[in-house]
Amino acid sequence: MAANDYEYFKKAVYELTKIDLNAYKERQMKRRIDALIAKNSVSGYEKYVQLLKSDKDKFDEFVNYLTINVSEFYRNPDQWDVLDKKVIPQLIKQYGKNLKIWSAACSTGDEPYSLVMALSLHLPLSQIKIIATDIDKQVIEKAKVGLYSAKSVVSVPSDLKEKYFTKIGPSYQISDEIKSRVTFKQHNLLKDPYDKDWHMIVCRNVLIYFTEEAKVEIFAKYNDSLAKGGYLFIGSTEQIMEYRELGYVRENSFFYKKE
Figure (tube, helix red, strand yellow):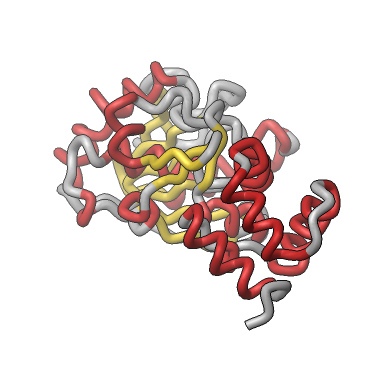
């Protein structure tokens, strides 16, 4: 195999970092890596791999290039505390241990992965299953890679960070055991049909980008999709003004329960 071959480069990177470049869109990724190689004035992939092995700063620069800077895991930690102490125990009491949970507009995966970790304090991982959807195919691909900046994981409880993340250069890779509990799908909140009987729907800090009419329509659809007594967990940038008319009981400013 030629050392200037991108296939060779992908294998070498995997051996070095355990990051699978096959998960990224090839044309774009190859273009970006070629630009990095040119910037570092080295000729070809083999020389660049040697540089990555010998120069920590260049290695960190490369990993940084692949890393997604998401808002953050466990955003608004006090609300995750409510989820942990009140909502999850309530859901298990009401529906048993096979919970049906949807992370809607999941973006780069910080939310569904945070949910798996939060649930892991109450249930064995083998029983946790999250469906995560987003309209953007590319962010879903990034979510599947699961490589995050240090800033993104700052609110993850330290025991969970230690247990489920591996530090690679300046970044953090989430473990396969967490990843395997999430199924990602493409879904358009305004056009596609919604599945039914969810025990909890999580959709946070997304609907601020929608018109008021679209928000009401989506909150109504969520209510219709929830099982009786199911929860909707929203973000700090949102509020459901007409929650009673839509069939919700307001538990606090982030959690709404279907009547």
